[in-house]
Length: 275
Image 1 (tube, rainbow, N blue to C red):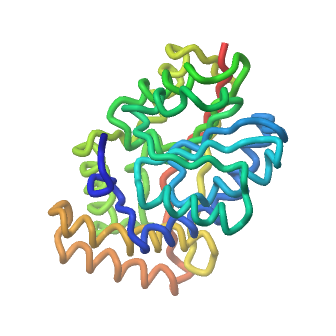
Image 2: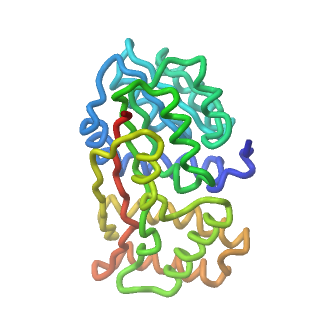
């Protein structure tokens, strides 16, 4: 199993807060996807790669006291956060546990209720063997259960407008770092075939493309991403300090310049049903 030290984006307080911003900005697309997949009260939901639980707690409210949320993540620290916060909120239907999506997920699910719906957002792009995760989910899912995924394809199309070399180099460095860690920033292109091979029928594919202008709330998505992530790229040798400084200066300009914007990476939505 991987450890917190190998968690690609880290598990510190800065990442916790960034994930919260990201979740709030994507809440509408997330809720629409759950509704499209027919999430109902009383169902058992797997929140795979739950992080500190931003989606977990909403899922717990959706399925109600007769339902259950199985919140799984690689990080001990994030799972501890989920457990603490679930207790504070009185959410007795949350079962949070550490699991490796491509390692022991099937074992961790073996003694838990069968899954009606599995949800994963920006998780499969970091997995070295995504089909193993799908097979683990399928092995513990009821017939007719659904998988709902939000993940990346064409990640390197992310750009500042007008184009900026600092931004482009940071995007390329990000894609290289994820691949070097065993992930794939274009994994959504492969997911339909992997789902079919894992016993699912793909029922829905769509793309969410956002535009982030400096005065809009959505600008917080690329802004907090790069201000959290770019220094880590410098620390790991994927990006030069000069390019990082240029990138952050670009973001400062975009934030106050109505002539500029950032085009974030498109997010592919896939819903599949177990045969």
